[in-house]
Image 1 (cartoon, rainbow, N blue to C red):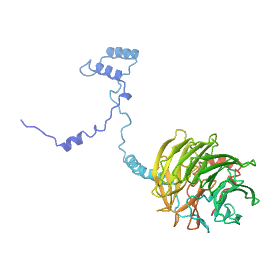
Image 2 (cartoon, rainbow, N blue to C red):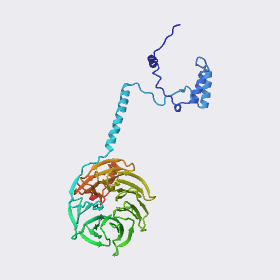
Image 3 (tube, rainbow, N blue to C red):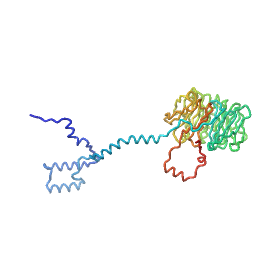
Length: 441
């Protein structure tokens, strides 16, 4: 008996009109379908007489069943055979990935690896433990150069000499008050002075320390000074007997000091004994002590968007940044930076921080937080970066090195604002601090 065979290609072609059928149970009425099957199977030729048809229509109407309902249905409309529609769909599918990449590139900000401005800083002492650079909320940058303190007005570009020591002593530290009204200056002889930048007059000198003041930190009217002998003093600048507390938690020079900026009364300190202490203003005993670093801890910085988060950085034999929860005393994370850590500055707008470094790379590094992925390395100076300060608008970082260069870097550019936000801000009076924003160009 002769048989006919169909090639696979022909069979596939013959069945091609059915291979894209996708049934959907949610789009069909199963009850109607079953009723229609039973109705059609009632007659061999698939037709009914008039009486039977009328009877079944009445029954279906009473049961809420639709006659001649499709048993199977497409979940969505079947694809069109129109060549123009097919070409348009193909073009959209090819363009969409590139469109997404273009949007991602547009949203990714660019961090310049060249400074916007460079100023000379002759006579800067090459001493890791000192703190000789600070930027006020009124846009004045103070820098200590040997026996002098200079003020640079970031708005006008003017520079003037605030003070000049007549003795053999040198400037070891400086720190602005939170409102930028006064500047505290720590000297190598153990004295702490308060200066008014407007009148360029010294308002007060507070003695008592037996060694140099390496670091200072303000908390409203309370000024804390870290000394080379390992002690920390609290000075109430409103009263004659300024010394109100003396803290002993370090066995070597205190080189890192920072009050928590929200006024919670917590002080973080780091020393040349590789120790980090957290102090409560109500006690002269550390709230907790951490000895995870293996070198001096100079970089101490509180996170602006998470009040209890503290970052600390170690020196040349440590090179790590540790992150602490100061409520639970737990170490949250750590990162090996590969270089001596000299300072840490948190961004105000981004979930990021920038660290400055000494040996071996002398770089600035921007990190994402909490992922701690490295965003960019900036080769900043020829020698180690000793000090950094962030501008009041949080966008520009100043760095200074023993190469006697003071450089300004646009690290944290302002985030682009929506049209609604920009319109709302345009209708509001400008903030006094914003009106004095830095203009470096």
